[in-house]
Amino acid sequence: MVELKEQVKGNIDAVVSEWIKRDDLKPDDLFVIGCSTSEIAGEHIGTSGSEELAAVIFAGLLDLKKATNVKLAFQCCEHLNRALVIERDSFDARFHEEVSVIPAPRAGGSMATYAFKNMNNPVVVEKIKAKAGIDIGETMIGMHVKHVAIPLRFEQKTIGNARVTGAKTRPKLIGGERAIYTNAIENKSC
Image (cartoon, rainbow, N blue to C red; front, side, top):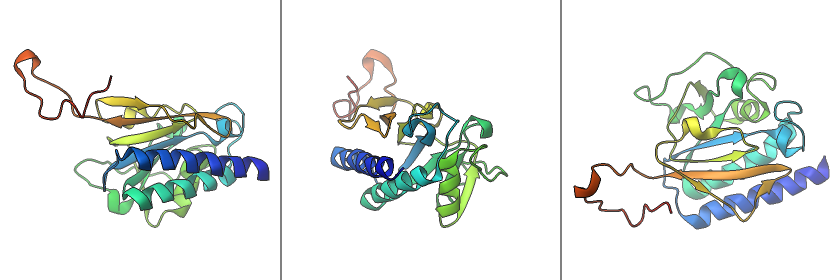
């Protein structure tokens, strides 16, 4: 486990460094994290969760938070309908609905459980619309990302044994052929 934890630390540090270099994240952006520690360990999602591995990922994402001032949202597993753990100071009753549950490794997942235990004042919400996010182990964060999502590929393609992808978003381009898009060039997705 020690060797895997060291590998995961190097991997998450590389991904966080790439996020910071991209300069896509702005202060107070919601950033969703979907993470299967089972997949990181090379096992099938939901079968071998590890709060030890979650701790390594959490520490790396705190570095991202410190560098960019984003607000982190940790997605629970499907057994909690992919609810999210956020800090109470990120909660806004206009956009979030609090739910009554405490994540556990077998009902929420190890990553969300670890986040809940280690955040300053956690709250679980039903859904969010994040500006960007990271998916470690194909946990399907898409339901929590704003339209229009733009997939990101990193040089660091895995964290441990899990595939890693990211997503950022851009405003919808609406209006058809007569519309003028003031920031269309910076929002190109292709």
